[in-house]
Length: 128
Image (cartoon, rainbow, N blue to C red; front, side, top):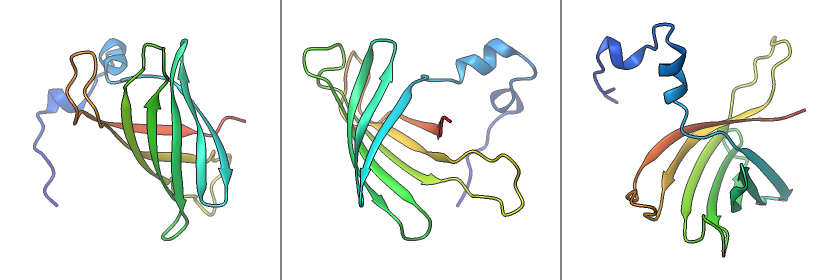
């Protein structure tokens, strides 16, 4: 797999906290209810959110496939995002490691002038 060539300035934040913050697309809270290999839940942020439905595949480590749908009669009505993630590696000698899902999300339907196809990485860290 060939990785894209990036200039030094596009990869590093060079200690610039504002440049680092611009890399964050969103901050939200996932809530999952799991029954066997089925998942349902919510993704919520500042008065907005998506309803989630998905599946869990235990083969080759745990992975999830989730569809996030906008809520009717809210600002997210008509939105749709697809999430794919894997459970982050657990270090056998790790201390204090918190379980996390690491993956990507794609905008499946256009909304608010943004086209379908936009992709972002995400990390969901288990809250204790």
